[in-house]
Length: 68
Figure (cartoon, rainbow, N blue to C red):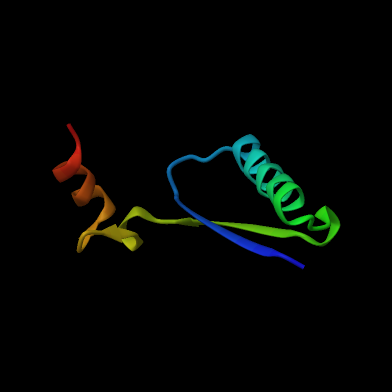
């Protein structure tokens, strides 16, 4: 029984996009590992930008430094 946890920043991911992620991950596990879609669980967590960081910085600051 696979459990997949997807974490994304809370920047307007739509219901339709979430549905595509859930379907895509479920299909991938079925195709690659032969897992039953009926027992595959996918959870999407949306994380506030100030609670997500990279390179020792909050995401918004990291993006400012690394955008070109």
